Image (cartoon, rainbow, N blue to C red; front, side, top):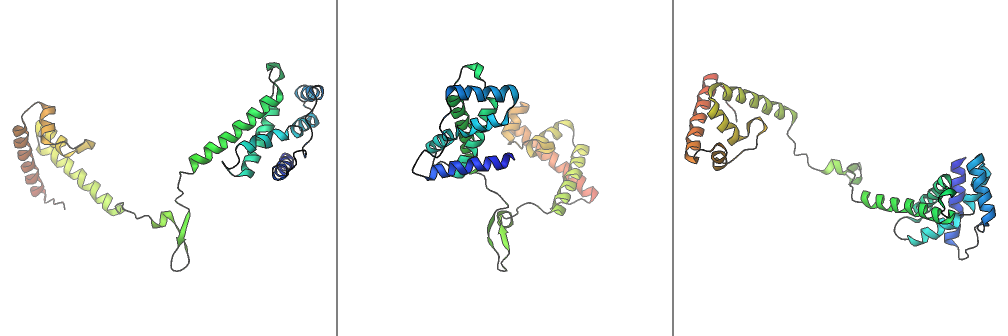
Length: 234
């Protein structure tokens, strides 16, 4: 029922926006009739009173939409403005000393501005499932199909993780604490960021040449342990 009524309202506004004459909407209610309808709807939930308030304020939707023509699809602006009108009638409080027309126009404009902002934001998003062409057999191709996949195959990922695990075991077993710290900082073990020798030297407060000697000795220990285990990595 609500959708039918909404479609009716949108149809009226579309007719208005596409016509030369501006008198296709009901005239605004008198102050007394408007106050009576507001009271009936607020106090008794009278649906007829609510519908009357909406119908006699339709021209406000058309008035606001005209300000934003060209900023978005007119049909969307009209539908969104109509929703703003209905929200305004639902939430209007006469005790706040604001005229119904002023409050309604503000609600309509707020809804339209939110739509325009949302559409501008979404305009920058690219759908990976969007069709961008077709292959030689006529099958549709999406952006996801044509973007090259540079990720490693699953088998390679598993092999790399296994190698890293073995290497970490060797490093921890054959190096003393200082050597391990230097190797960890230099080569980014355990998720650390790899650092240059001078950065490690500054961090540990020892000379760069000393770091170089520690690193060389540690690498030789690791090679010897790998040779004993018969472990070789590419």
